[in-house]
Amino acid sequence: MPKKNNNSLIGADKNNDFLIGADPEFMCVEGREIVIADDEIDNAYSSRTKFGADGCGDTFEIRPSPSKCPIILVKNIRNIILKKIYDSKYFLNYDWKAGSYYNGYSLGGHIHFGIKRIIKEKLGLHDTSIGDNIQINNYYNGITCILSQYLLPTYVLLEKPNHFLNRRRNYGQFNDYRIQKHGIEYRALGSWLISPYITTAILCLAKIVMWEILNNEEFKREFDNTNYQKFITLNYYSIISRDNLDNFKEDIKILKKTYPKIWNDIENMELFNKFENEIKILNELIMDNRTWYQKDNENNFIYNWGVNFNLKPKEQESREEDIG
Image (cartoon, rainbow, N blue to C red; front, side, top):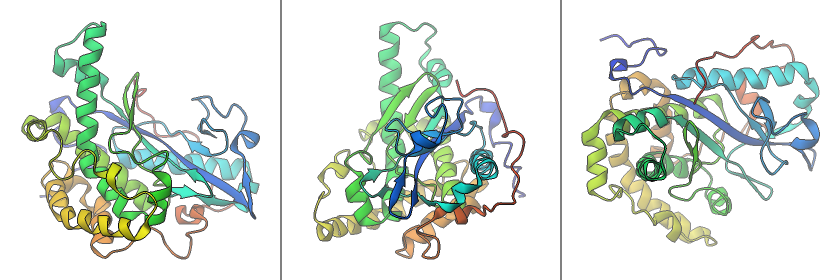
């Protein structure tokens, strides 16, 4: 059976499709000096600024237009990078740092899901009373616990062990999320901007799992019945040793033994076949005991994105309706 076009999702008639967005962080470094994002960008904190600064002001943040298709979302991310280089060529003089952690900074790879309308319909809610909001928030909490059973183990097994230990001070807790007007911002992962392949794989996996949660009631019910602890306990990431790298590596061995069961679940999700080519790199790296870092460009991820002085960005990103 031929694959359908990536811009048209399987099962769209279910009416539970949703926009996916992101605001991944990274750092720029010149020599040994950190380039302060707030000093480089005008209106750095405005949501309309596509190439801006995170709340701390030191790290940069990319804010692409959301899409129902994660592959379009990645294209939007790349176009923002291209536009910045095209407009400010001196940025290629910097080393761009992504991943989980750099020089005292934890870097986030936050993923947004525009699912509020869907959740309200599932719960039969039409108003926004305090009681209704409590129900919605409880539903969000369950959803993000399920996401963390798939996305967080995948991410942890791909990042460098010492980076994981460092970033957990700010990111990496099992169920880290914020409620937004459009739905939720999932904040458990570090910055996956290290390459377009990893970026695409992580965002496609996020789409696959959230789609399954929203469109497969039996799948969600199974997690409800296990208190969202099908593969790993809710406090697993809290009991991993923070400071002892040797103990951490032993903890990771336990997680890796569980991962084939996690991946088997992913393979049985409805959208897996659609995005198999995009996400298979995750399982291949994990099974080969490799991290996602490429030795050649580990110190400057921008070249992994095929960026140079002469590439001209598109006039506009690929747009769909606002994520809200």
